[in-house]
Image (cartoon, rainbow, N blue to C red):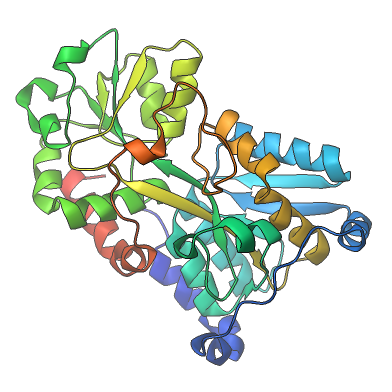
Length: 353
């Protein structure tokens, strides 16, 4: 995992292209008026015929969103799914080469949207539902992005390998010698979810925790979606981090996994959507962005994806612990962006990956 382009490298590569619009992004602007889905927008989007969405959301969920959008509007969604850091690198490399292929991007690392905004490459566009229902902390004040989905990064365990009374109740419980060689976790250099979770953990618990965890003979995987899968297969007994939504979906399909919301608090990860100014399909991009924040699309990410919605009008899925009942770690995209390179470098050194 050592051969990866850093966030700093990508920003440097894009600096020349962004220079022309950088001054404008330094001056705070007001968000444009909210826009609804109108017959005129639909007609213009249909003429373009497709929207290209780069996303780190699970492939099955992106396909369901795309299928629902096509069924409603007759427009194809070409979802390009990979890890959040790979999404970020790809867009940076494309823009550095003057390639404008992406219409809308979604990342599990909200700091990516901050970086794109600073580069001046995001289009200010406010969907009607965002303006009406979304809390200020979950949407950009200038209207360039909003929190399309959220998830948590809890502990979880395999119920066939661990009894409920013996399961960890806190992150620090994972440092018990009995868990040595039985833990799986994902990598902040690949996954935006894990980068955000690691930032929140370091801020609230400290690097001492990771220094001790690194001595537990941890199975290291890449994506945040991988630990739940390893857990369900019985390859490890517990996961130290990973996606809550995969745990939900596996559990509801009969797999022996159970989430644990640690006493210290659970990392909370918001994944925003943003439109690019140079989008090749600008009207389809606006229509898709607007649709993504409707109750219909938000219910899909909950029911089909196991994700959390920031839209107050959608319903939580039966059988899942309500978000209001969970102690959450506070999100801080700006802090995560500033600390990202240090986190990846220090993590790589500690875990030797």
